[in-house]
Image (cartoon, rainbow, N blue to C red; front, side):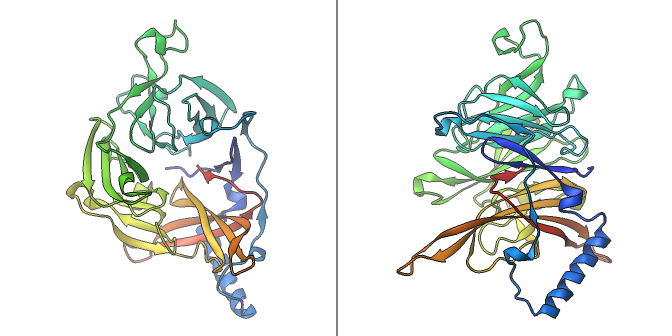
Length: 382
């Protein structure tokens, strides 16, 4: 998979491109390793603390948005926007990046990053009232290879599940142009066998060669209170359109995990759920036998915040070629009379890392490239 040159930063109603090579990555792995060694030696000479501080890193200004929507005059939960990556089998590395923009009322459009254009598409049949789960897959049997990518979108409760596909939409009322025989349209998919649940984490497992992809989603039971208890992990076969339960366990990640087949067919990468929020690789080879994931690698070098920094939000974007961009937003806590604590400030740290195979072994190691503080708060990286 060819590495992406940009990563998309999402704010409330806009999308910005951050150039990776000059801002978060060195030209080569060797240069990154040399820089890390020099930084470690410099820290020892200065007898600095082991935790990062704001002044330890350069500031990265967020570029002007490439795409902006006018916020509504009367914002409500139904006007919030979700930006869903629609990158296809090459993950956006081939210059074909698309992003689906959808609000909770179901109104949708596709942003084509290469052409800087917006294409209107039909609204979802069932509006997604909560933050949706989305995975982009490729239909090997598509009639037009240029439009083989589909985007599966499910609301966080698992109550609606649809696929955005390009082809003959059938009944005329689903068409954007009534004289077209091919257009973007939504197809209803079977929902997972869960009730009163909330999605915790999800991942797309790419199939080997011509095998179909699998979407894995972990749910919690809301009838036991907010995130009161696990309901389990369910798998959706994108070819047969069938759900199966993988087990009563949940994927141990925060939000989305990423499958990087070039690093290991059975490995998922992401930020672990709970402290100390390590970037890790989990072995999910036991999913077919109802076995829980096993930790294979965990790294903390991407961030080492001071005790008064509390992780508020994070996201990970897989860039291809073993490279990841990690976003972590921290609330800086401070005392405010009578020993009460309140948020004094929020800082956003972006870090470029690369996972490579360890010399002389089958293991993996993480190489940190660059870390920079963003000059504003973002929602996520995609």
